[in-house]
Length: 371
Image (cartoon, rainbow, N blue to C red; front, side, top):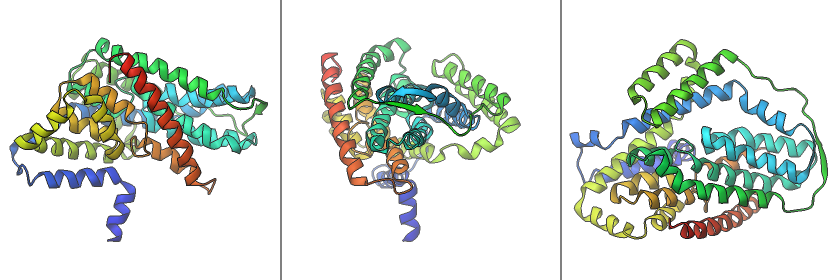
């Protein structure tokens, strides 16, 4: 029982997805058809991107970038804006969870050094919003975008035509939120100057990231990408292999099986298809509040061809409850580490801010014809 409890704490979504996959086998017994459920292209891209991002973090890129932007004298509002925009733009390339892992501890360090711990909760909450909203701006920003981009064979023009307007509205909202509150002048210093480490590895990661983008945009085959990444890691980055989030990859496999089995059942297929008809974005956003937006996108993609609604619903569905986007739980855990404050107060501010942003962005989506 204790082992089960620890597993649920360590990988809650993986455990739930595994139980769903096992339960769905009662509907559709195991067969060779299961092999067709799994999208290997998406899994290869996710594996490659996670390995590359782990290598970039190892080289200290994020620390150098943050220090160069934040060192010196700044107005508090400007400092807040810089701390929030760092994860917004970084998440477009390195995913929302990695952006938060890199920049939330940095924001906590900066605010503690300048004696403004009263700003910790609003800044960390805004960073979380920024990472979740920035990541929706590109096909590689988050797992559900990557999956839907390939599931529906989208072109860059189709993707950005839907997402770009909301990304611009998100940026405007974040900037406006950062300018609230009393302003003062602060001086930010760091005890040690960060420097890029292992420049050779950084060059290799940059080249591999370029190959990932070529694969995303269908210039090279996914198996060519996988071969290149594995050869590069085995030759010069074996320590990066354990840093890949294999739990996320396993979660995708489980939900592929679950969605495939549900889709193969005529009654459930008809039920979900009917529920999505005309309400794809709303349904995806609501389902995301319970099982998070990545599993919601995988599950619902088998029952609708309305990729626009599904893309918007899954991306905006990352706002709301803490589990709507699992990256949000990373921020909460980092904030609470060291007994810095109350989970209740953090969650109150988090929920209020998320609901406000969700309401405005849903309204903008309706205006743009998405919801």
